[in-house]
Figure 1 (cartoon, one colour):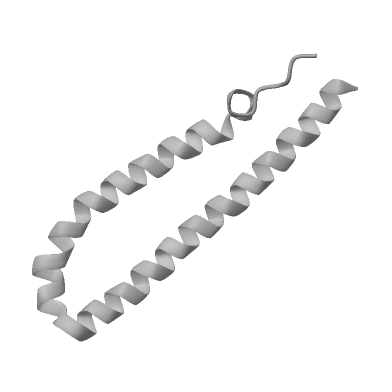
Figure 2 (cartoon, rainbow, N blue to C red):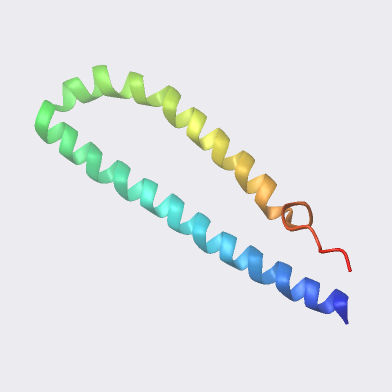
Length: 86
C-alpha cells in the first residue's frame, strides 16, 4: 500500500514540475519576443544584430544548459524528494 501512495505522490510532483517548466519556458519565449520587438523599435535592426545578439548568445547558451541540468535533477524524484524514514 505504501508503494502505491508513493507512486501517486511522485506522479503528482512530476505533473507540478512539468507545469512550472512549461510556464518558465513560455515566459522566456514571450519575454524574448517582446524584448526583440522593443529593442528593434528603439535601437534599430542593425544595432540589434551587431551589438545585442553577440552579447546575448553566450548568456542564452548558459541559461539553456542550466535549465537542462535542472530538468534532469528534478525529474529524478526519488533523489529530489527522499522518502521519510518510518
